[in-house]
Length: 78
Image (cartoon, rainbow, N blue to C red):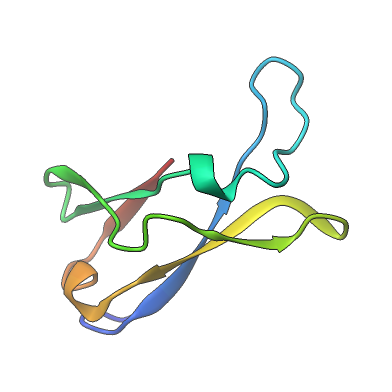
């Protein structure tokens, strides 16, 4: 991953009680980013896109704009 370049992030979401991947839950998943170990802020792409509920359950794709990638390292949280 390069600095100052828009990128995509994959987030895996699962139910902490049942350990079952979360599907159809994009509206309730928010990704956060921390640049250079700094303040944790919400990613501009506030609703990820579910990749494939059947073949990749629980995987959601988020877009990070160039302005969200000017640092190394970048940590992603869900």
